[in-house]
Image (cartoon, rainbow, N blue to C red; front, top):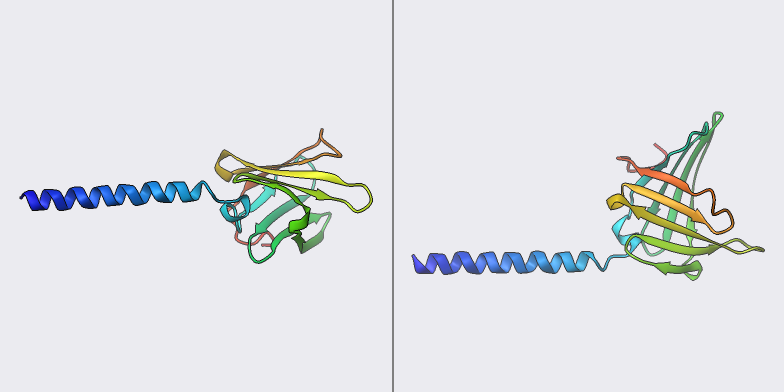
Length: 139
């Protein structure tokens, strides 16, 4: 009976140790790793539909879907690592613009269920997005 108790305690300790280790590894994820493939849809009172998806890979790509007055736009663009300013687990900032440079900050909140995009050149008008169950923003 003692051997069975020791075996049980060993399995319990090893199981708890590996869970703690996994929790620590998850906290080291970047935004791009943590939210890879998530599709968010903009929450707006305007008469258009806008979705985006950020994909992590050898390059970081952003897939856009936009519909307004019957016109449908679906495209993908690359986010250059040279434009990244800061990347954390739940946000990233990058420099954008050719002639006049501005900073865009993307922040996931509420466990990734909400996304806020702030623009330094238009700080009074952030964009708000909610997570969807879609796997492709162009669906």
